[in-house]
Image 1: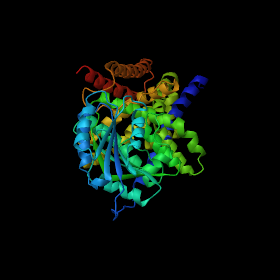
Image 2: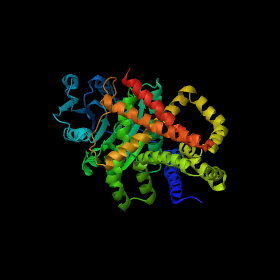
Image 3: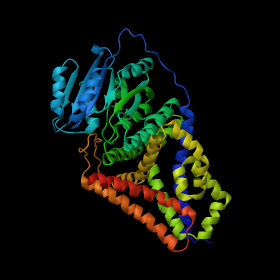
Image 4: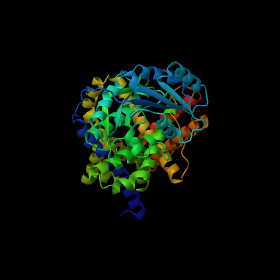
Length: 494
């Protein structure tokens, strides 16, 4: 018979595994929706194209803003119907670069320099509204370079549907030669392409991604503009719009190119913001979504899943902890017999179908056999996707996901202790990472400590003579944390 503590630990492992797996099942629904065709609009024959304002918020980004402005000036759109408004909070030479462009293109570019960063990016975009003449706003980051036809591929949808509040385009990276860029690109393709496209085709809530999107001015003003009470103001405004009856649309053939973070240390700045921001929005909008009378149950569920997604990481980390405790505290025979029982096999298969990584952690043996059986199919997919490059991108994305178990948990803890959040832009130039060396070093040490604890548990269980093959799954997150710590330390001491 198991003791009360042993039963609680075992239940903790199962529940902490099931929560992310249930959320993972939603991806199968989205995969089905992704196959739907959307209605394509031809470029309308308008007597007059609507006025569009390109809005860009900048902060110490003089090294990259020039290329973006050049692309904006080359856009295929009536010149007299397009203007550029830049709100700059910089403390370096960026303002000088912007003033030169403003002097040269005074009929088209307007620069507003703020002496303080009040409201950060949300505050800057709110300021831009006051100086904008456009009926529609194209929101860009300092490094977001729209393709020439971007507006002509998005504006028609907004003209055709008066309840369409915003259109999100597709974000791609300029260079994918390094493993890091391919890895970040794989993550971006899942969230910024597959997820948004599927939700859009299902007429569910989608999230504005902070750049590469066109907003209807009337919709922005209807919801009170940009708000800075979360660090993901983009997600916040898109949810407020859709809760008020405006729609969002993802248009995948409208493309913007941008620069990927130049280092793993810089990328963690982006990861942390993308984890904490949605959780802040979950607290802000959860009850409103649940109580909304104008939303169907399916829309409410998908809207909540989208902003609750970062909670997968704390649950996954708790699954690792409970799995380690389970193999340390429960009898070896009980665990061996459980994973060979019908219930254990069904649990392993269910977690494998819905969330393979979780399945590998808790029940290593059967998921590995299933992966071996699926290997020919996976190899065929890799060959069709440029073999090694595709495989390296997927492995890198898994490393990022593994790291986010720690990043997401830290973000959740910071929220619970009400630590003040600061909006930090993602560095795009080497040597300009806004995260201090001390902070990067502490993150590396956190990964080393976490990996050491897990590996110590495996060694302890082995020395006790209670080793089973299933416990090897615990080594996966540990190995991932060791690899990422080496990457972080290597960038610090390079």
